[in-house]
Image (tube, rainbow, N blue to C red; front, side, top):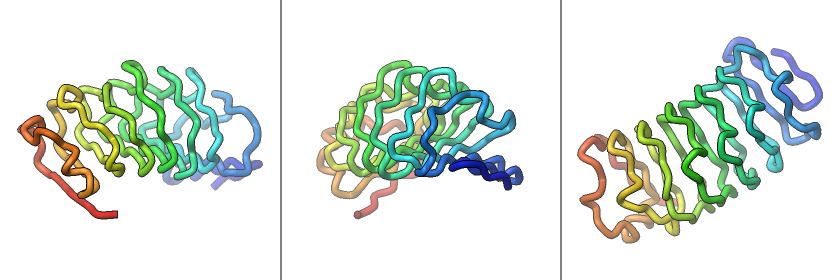
Length: 172
């Protein structure tokens, strides 16, 4: 395991962590070439287009992360994205890479879901105010996880694709 000024790299798991005390702007050259998992524990960490390497498959933001993520900032290799509880910005059509399979939205996300990648297989929504647009739900979705308080805001359950094999309701 390598550690340097708020950055930790676990070579065994290929996990790179940006700690909350890291205070330098992110640059592409600071990331190892073989990183698979990125954990961002810094609430005000700004991710810019072209900075993240195309080997990253999973990104986990801390619960306090609140900054908007610009379109095109995620690498094309990204398969799983977990946004923190404080993230509450709308997504634009080009925000998500096409290969994204799993998306978790935090407790404060209350925007309308207007754009989701067509290959998304797992979607977790934790806020009752998140608006689910029936035309947005990908037809390849296999697992849908909702706060059980969210169920009444789903106006038409028939929009859930036939491909959903697992519907999970949880209570906060």
